[in-house]
Image 1 (tube, helix red, strand yellow):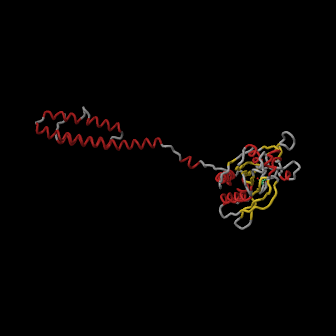
Image 2 (image 1 turned 90 degrees about the horizontal axis):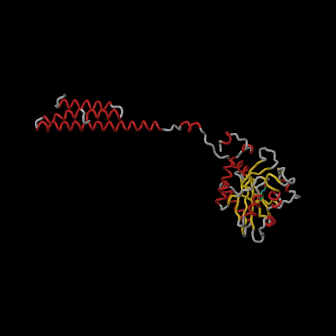
Image 3 (image 1 turned 90 degrees about the vertical axis):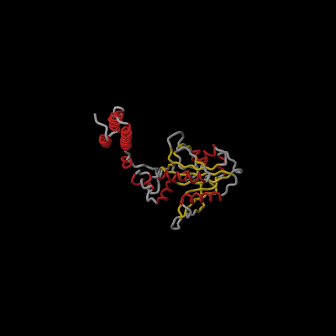
Length: 336
Ligand code: DAH
């Protein structure tokens, strides 16, 4: 049996500290601790010899055994915290999700620029107190023409280049040639006051070229309330154009003709070079149109407007050719 003296305690401590330092896992450290500090460990067996010593020596060695024990415990504790840290890092590394491939490989898409333009238009009008309305893309002659004061003998019908659907009587069902039918549907279903915009797809027999698409998008506006004047129309168009294009852009109305408005106008916006660009049509809702929808024109007045969203996108982004919008070339689309 090892004899209890200064040297054996010093050796025991040095050996224990070595073993603790080279323990690579928490389990290995636990084993070293049991071996040295445990009930049947080497320190305990030295301690047993205290009983056989003289009181003076017993006190001295008792203290030595205790400081040795404390030193070994401190070394074990320090090593334990090191090893826990390593184990924690290893666990984190193990559980880490590698997202680098996603970040590098996947290109996130975005809305088409016509959708972006439509969303912004809606935002601007909703900000001015309008609601967004919708109507079907396949319409009857009543909604697309008649209720809008365009009877079948009316020359304006010809100018709409309508695409008819082979359903029912000839020329009675069609792809809507403008969003104006949503005016009628709204007035039939909703009591005034009415403040709506109606964006949507429209169709004409046009052959696609740099400035035309056979399927295009319009946005319609309709206001019906009491005491509405041409000044309200003009102010609304100006407010919207400034919100959409910026405060430097000016607007003007030019007299025009539409069967569903009286008086009617076309509205233009100013360009940087001082010239004017036509944006759409507008006017005071024709009293006959109000009557067609069961609204008393002596009590209610209103204005309406309509313009092409695709053309607006072409203008805003200065595109050379409107067909770019439907070619679906991602190299083009990604730019916006
Ligand atoms: N619907 C007309 C078109 O497509 C545009 C238009 C003109 C709409 C005047 C209106 C309006 O609401 O008041 O050519």
